[in-house]
Structure formats: C-alpha cells, structure tokens
Image 1 (cartoon, rainbow, N blue to C red):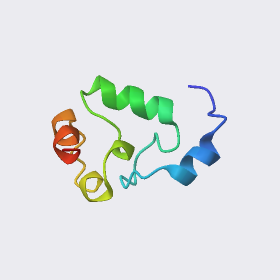
Image 2 (cartoon, helix red, strand yellow):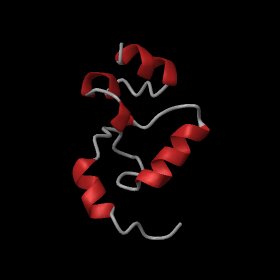
Image 3 (tube, rainbow, N blue to C red):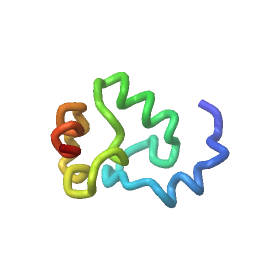
Length: 65
C-alpha cells in the first residue's frame, strides 16, 4: 500500500467512529475493504446509523427511505 496523498484532507472529513480502524483517511482502501465484505463505509450513513457499525447495504437502503 502506498501513501495516500490526500490523507490529511480525508481525515478532516472522515466520519467513521470505529477507533481502531487502520483505514481511516484512506478512502480507496476503506471502500475496497467494505465492498469486499458486502458493505458500505461508515461515511455513507447518517451519524446515528454509523454508530451502530451496521454497514450492510440493507441498512443503507433502510436509512435512506
């Protein structure tokens, strides 16, 4: 994995509350990881849903009705 040129900027906008996350600020890595798990990153969810750590696509759809 190479260094993210936008890391500082990305971190200022990252809404993920999962503290031990090693992908914070590395949006490409985060997206790749979550999609491989059939999920979406926390930044796709409203804050009250993001805090549940339910990143499922089903939860995303129900949160955006």
